[in-house]
Length: 131
Image 1 (tube, rainbow, N blue to C red):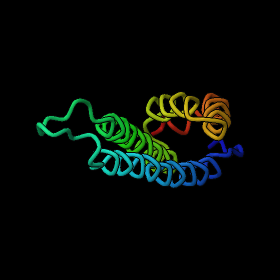
Image 2: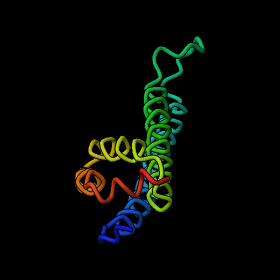
Image 3: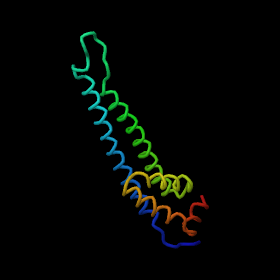
Image 4: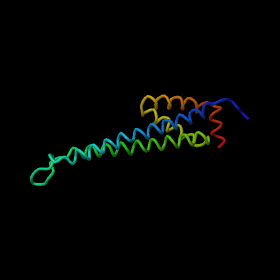
């Protein structure tokens, strides 16, 4: 057996923290959508004929909804990555989510790059090959 040290348990904890932060960031998009609801209900956008010329609240609601869906999907993938790191399974999924995390800001860039460096080490890759 090859018992070389690795940082996979540390990365598992960091992915849980990143998943929690991503989930909290989803609250921003919920608030963004609610702002759209409030803007859409302003009486100034409805003229005397009852037809709405253009309601900018719809734009806020659409952007908030799309942002919420994307953020929740990234959070779910991040939590799944933490689970798979613990189980030492799904090497390719962890690799893809590490690359995806590189698109999510400074914390995601650092976590993604260091995860890629760690899981491409030969002795760590063996752990995933066993399962």
